[in-house]
Length: 569
Ligand code: GLC
Ligand code: CA
Image (tube, rainbow, N blue to C red):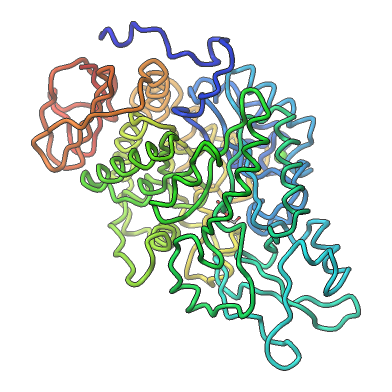
């Protein structure tokens, strides 16, 4: 085997070395959707003890960190992204003691912990929102949210015609304490998710408190939900929906990606940097690409999700363009790039690649388009799905992703080659996007179905009871137990890739190699680690070098279509 593998592993906390403040730059971060990962007490809902019980699995997978989607008390109107108390654990998911035990177990296994912070909105079950309703118009309590009088006679019309991200109006009318119909509050998402007023210093102070609370409990970093919407210009007269849509998103849009949002993150950065090692953060910001580096700067959150690979078709030119652009943007901010193929909001990549490409929608902005495409796919018809082709391409894309400089965010279940679950009965669905777009958008439940750990059992080893979302029969073939140690399984490929990645990790650069084919991409990292992906359908010859790993079998020494190989050259 190659000399490359004789080198010692890149210093990481696995070796018990001193904490490395740059650990995040090329980390493999595994997203856990806590309700659907592992259920320790047989109530059908995944929980923190379930995560603790699977630390061995996570360590064997070879990831550097986990990111936990929200596990806080919640009205569960949006899968936990409606937080009722930012500094506690949902009793259905565990306790703060369970959290501490989980963090200790993960840290003992050399795995960092990133938690989700949802600062744009709370749950309508948050104590502040209840206080705002009780205190009435003009009160200090209402000033923590965005309340306005309605339009028209008696204020019976919403203040504007804006629609929410989940469909339906972005304003909901409240009943005043005296029982009369009253003011309206803004919610960019579901009505159960009232938007905070970030112009209010109390809101700002409370989030600093929350960041310290979790940092003090040993959390290593934060994933920041809807990071581009916190600050808003809601001065009168409010624009119409059409005016909002037409407004350029260059920093002074009334809602999205306003320049002053970065004042908040500069404040957060001072909190992060007061810890050793500094706490990290990654922004979920669906913004124009040239504006992303602001979120990723060292004075701000430090990293921002790159979703362009996620929305790209499985296509050599598209992948190359995204990688080139993204590395340039990362260099601009001094951050490392981030790569994402799947998460809890989009159709799993095995399924996306098995579907015919979606026609682009006309007349939408770049960022709208990308988010829309990813979400709309949830409604794609199942009969157009080629399952095997999708899985094959997903494995090839994953090996491509894991060879890139930067950090990779993996979503639970992709290491099992899971497809989206398409046939969830309507009455079992949970996602508000389904209810608010009646039937048009199937919603995001299909990627949130509890994981199959074993081929049998009431919920394929997820727990001792039926899972909170129905699992399909084909989950048995994908169970972790079935794939464990099986040659050629997707799980084996992920483990091998992540283990090799630890040893091969090198300077954050790549050099594109000439392949002589429009369908084949090849790049070399500075240490000779070379990744070649054949996006086409006919086999291509391999250059000289030792084969380290492939996404599928080679064909008489040739790299078949929809396949990736790692070489030491
Ligand atoms: C983010 C989350 C998504 C959630 C939304 C509202 O986009 O990833 O799951 O529904 O924010 O909080
Ligand atoms: Ca449980």
